[in-house]
Structure formats: C-alpha cells, structure tokens
Length: 70
Image (cartoon, rainbow, N blue to C red; front, side):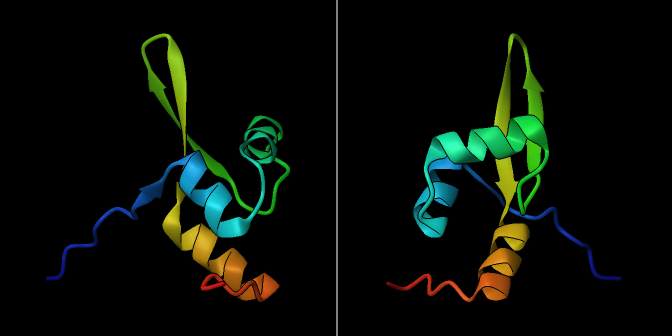
C-alpha cells in the first residue's frame, strides 16, 4: 500500500514570487479567506504561521495560465 505524503507547504515569500503578487496581498487572502487559494494556518505559541499548499499554487497557475518560468 502506497503512503500518501502531506503536500509541501510554501512560505508566503515563495508564493508571492511565483504568483507575482505582494506578501501583503497574500496575508490579506489568509486573513479574509477570500483569495483564490486558501492559507494553511499553523498555530505556534504566540504567533500564527501562514503557509500555502504547493498543489493549490500549482492549480492556480494552471487555471490563470501564468507562466512561472518568466
């Protein structure tokens, strides 16, 4: 039986670079829950850590037709 691994999580800076949007935009998406992709919030002591599923970012790139290589 194959083991399904958890999807890799990307930092906000990584996603901002790939999607060519500001980190502020991504944090607004995370806070409002209204962006085209959903954030993964990791509770860590006093501060929440925001991460993004690589698979969600890849799907968004395919839907929008963004060329990630340029």
